[in-house]
Amino acid sequence: MSHHLHSQKTKEYGIVNVLMGYEPSGGHIFCTVKQETTDRPLYDSMDDDAGGTHQLDVEYYRAILALLGLAVPESMFREVERDQALRVGSRYFVHD
Image 1 (cartoon, rainbow, N blue to C red):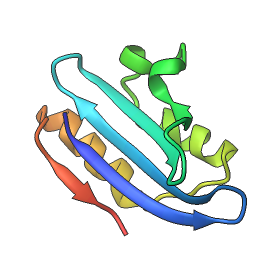
Image 2 (cartoon, helix red, strand yellow):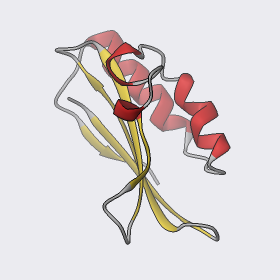
Image 3 (cartoon, rainbow, N blue to C red):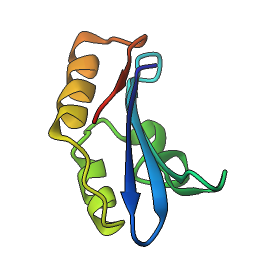
Image 4 (tube, one colour):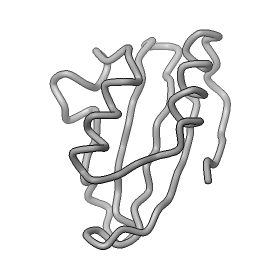
């Protein structure tokens, strides 16, 4: 699966890591949001009935991130879409 990571400092959560990517074997897009200080995610697409292995549209996660007050670089969405279009599963990229 591809991995696209963005870290940011927030007032509410401290440092937050957002991980999005594409899983070619299942054909779905995933997203996980975790505080740096805990293992418990703020959001995990696998715990979301509309997310998980059912989600094929990276735009779905834009709204989830907005609800959490997070903004990630547009390059994350663009590159995850690219991975999906090309069925790429072995990329790792850090977005500033």
